[in-house]
Length: 297
Image 1 (cartoon, rainbow, N blue to C red):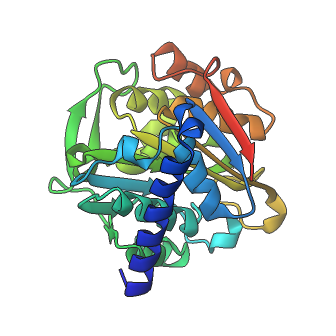
Image 2 (tube, rainbow, N blue to C red):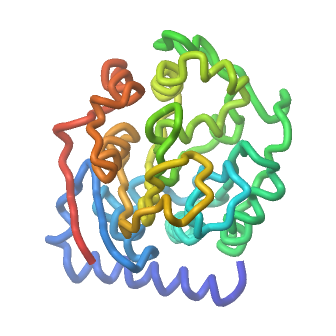
């Protein structure tokens, strides 16, 4: 982290706490889900997290944090196959403002890891913010630990990246996209990147597998990048013509509720998306009836 970034983090932190002192009545409302629309992406992320309790609700001094974006594809940021690097950088900044001791950023990519990390822009953005970017080049016993999934119907066990299991806080940061097999890829599906499982096996019963893993591994905070949503040819994309500008960030302490709200941007209901419906049946979270805070900045 260079001096300029440090000063920016410090200034943002001072402003954040000054606002809390100056406007305490505004901060009493905590929503289960927030949806913020703004052309200023960094501001939208900060506001969305603040509306669900603020970063200090999730990250305590000394915590080890994992920020898990979608870095699945060797695509440039403007094609939106991966999470916006600015959103990743902003979240890492916020974690350090809350005095996290370490912040790790990683994904198990589908394309070549070195190229996906670099060309998505996420590796550079995360490192500049002070995070430790972890390459995931292979599945091995040093990096993955097998865990049981007691509520699993299809997945009875799974190999999970040990940094997830050993972290104090897990922040799930997907990009909102169409998906040829899962209908949509959002927060729940983004957990495929924390496993060392054979992903072809997952596709035997993909919706069941996605809902199963989410009964066992639950992000503390989900922040969905819906700045530009991919409407077709997902998850890889390949053309800006597939995208729709939404300038939206969604946040929640419950991944299923966040996904349910994001599905609306596609004109879809969560109960029509099998893994979300299964997730609700398995107690992952709410697909309706949550308190929503929505604001345009």
